[in-house]
View 1 (tube, rainbow, N blue to C red):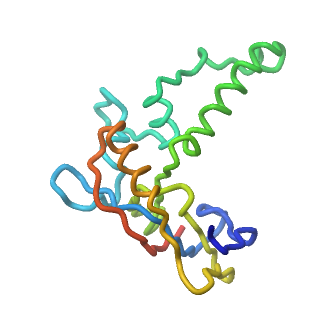
View 2 (tube, rainbow, N blue to C red):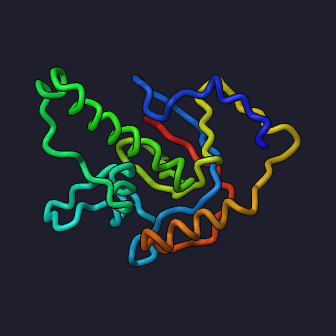
View 3 (cartoon, rainbow, N blue to C red):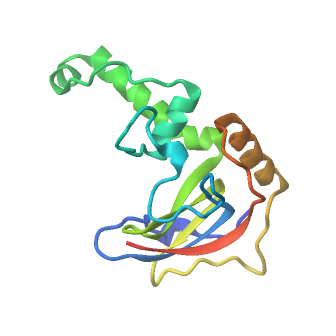
Length: 174
């Protein structure tokens, strides 16, 4: 187990300027030419059939991967007045939010909000330290053997090129 108190860690995209340190176990995302993806989303996040190459969120990518579809066109009035309709949407959102936990992976954005770079990482080893809030790792950092297998299995299922994972320390300026 990690000897880390994450209670002081704040989100990567807090309001104002954040300068966060991120420690994760995973690998950097590369494009089909073998270059590290810089300044744009990974190509596998591009919406299918979208000529404008708009990207989807990682959460939406996972939902597509498992065949989780939105119930129907969202209607705010119906949501506010029909408990069954509201429950259907609430269940959908809960399932979608839990997919990262189920797969055990996350997509880490680093570098900056204006020039993002990406790491596919194990969810259990994605730690953020905001400026002034150091994280303690005791006398060492443990890498669990099952983490590599989680990443390999996910990449195989998602059709993403697997690269040998490692502990990565990166930063985010946003």
